[in-house]
Length: 342
Ligand SMILES: C[S@@+](CC[C@H](N)C(=O)[O-])C[C@H]1O[C@@H](n2cnc3c(N)ncnc32)[C@H](O)[C@@H]1O
Image (cartoon, rainbow, N blue to C red; front, side, top):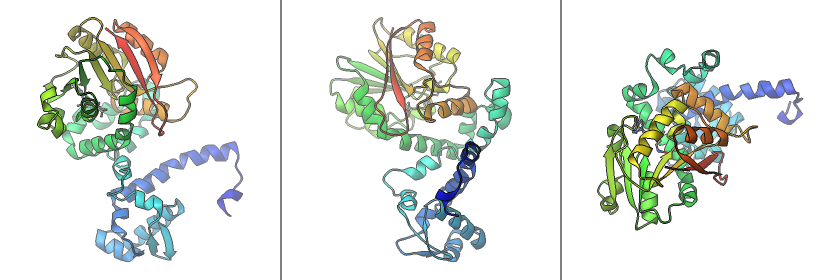
């Protein structure tokens, strides 16, 4: 029966949502196996693909058939497949870096989502019980998972950097620190845009080693300091603007308060603290922020926040709230800029 003839009832619709689990397994398996790279411009025989990739020919054919049902590859004749636009998007040389996004959490996401019932029962992050260690120690021990995660996050969020940079009101600021700024990609963009600005990339020692070459020794290096530190202990830079992008949502309110108080202790009165994180709304506008909220809980005990949640966090950290501004929606990733003053 064609898909459009299937009767849709509320029960069917909910049951269909759970099918997302098997769909995700089918697509991420194709991503892990780099199937899209293995198929060239000519139609490919599943048996040849299996031999090249060292896979079981029968099960690969069954996987390809399932992928065809989702519009990833087209069947030319039984056992022979060619690219579609969707499968081309999964190639490692595709412009949108979908492959990196698909592989973001393939190591730990399945197991951690399986622990959601535990989290709802206990109210706690289930990661340490399930994995025997906290998330950051897990990443330290699994550098491949760590680098896949970083590649995935940058592939997902880098396209938003110009939007974030546009939304940041840094005219008049002489100095800005990106706290937990990762490789410094956003800082680099801001320094390129604002020739008078001095920058600080404040990061843990291990991540600082991965800092963007342009900040390390390129033309921007003379306007940028790379500062190693632990924001739970002390933030050691005195600047006009402190930026936290996709960092505070990793932590609960107590940890965020510690970080923000350390920030305020380093800053002059009037300095600005800018947070760029997802924004929860009640009721939700889309599944993105509430899903991220649970994901942060499952991995690190973190959370996303509503405008009221940010207001409360800012107040308990002894700061003054200035504004919460949702970024214009250009993708499914909904972020907001939260500004507070020391
Ligand atoms: C989710 S990443 C966000 C990175 C970057 N802001 C971005 O948006 O791509 C969080 C960052 O916080 C850094 N970090 C974690 N704990 C830290 C600590 N205690 N002190 C300083 N940086 C820390 C990590 O190294 C990581 O780069």
